[in-house]
Image (cartoon, rainbow, N blue to C red; front, top):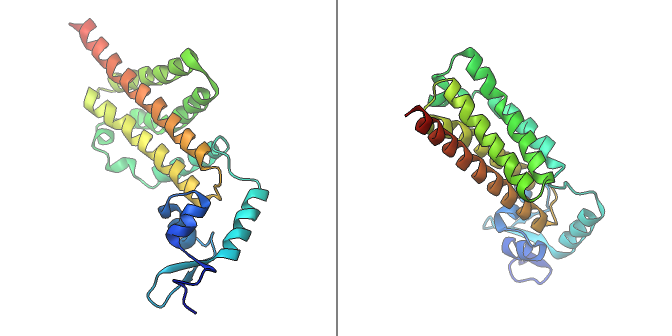
Length: 211
């Protein structure tokens, strides 16, 4: 059967358009066995229209992973990655003593708690939450002798783990409401941007007071 032209078959891009997701998401779902997929002799992915319709209907009926509920899963993934010695490769981390390293390993939990508070807050309260975390990172960095560049690198390490883990949860879940996830990632970026600015401003304030 020709899986390229037959109207009962969809290409990867056709499925992405039908589901309203990025083609890379369809590719990941296919490789993970989430979507039923077939291969042409040339190795291209093809999908039966009826099976995709059934999958879509089933996904809508099943309880989906909401962005807010994914935060717990994300925290577990971050802890696993830290346990995999990713921190040991960081130059800024190598400069710390044992107590300082312990404090920074707790940063993932503090980051997630602050993010959860931020997502539940509005307006000035949300901004205050992100800026408070930035002050916390700045104070910790100064306390353990990190320069502004290294303190920023430390924050970016945990920020990037957070975004990577959220993306993994997104790709491994049967996500239909992609707008909700897009809004969630947008708020995460807004939160972490404010936090990093607060970290840098706090360092600058410490320097100005010292001079």
